[in-house]
Image (cartoon, rainbow, N blue to C red; front, side, top):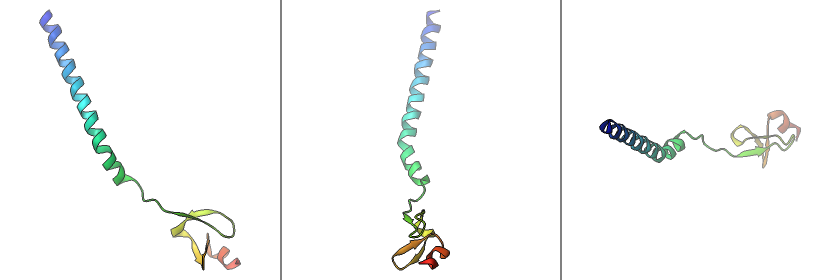
Length: 76
C-alpha cells in the first residue's frame, strides 16, 4: 500500500513539473508571436470640415488640410 502511495505522489509531481515547464515555455514564446500578429498602427487625422477622425491613408488632402471625402474637400 505504501508503494502505491509513493508511486502516485511521484506521478503527480512529475505531471505538475511538466505542466509548469510548458507554461514557462509558452510565456517565453508568446511576446514574439503576439508581435508578429499585431496589426500595424496607423495615425489618425481629423476632417477639417466635419471633424470626423479617420485613418491618414483614407483621407483626402488639399494643401495642409485633411478631409474625409472629396465632397468635403470641395466645400473649402
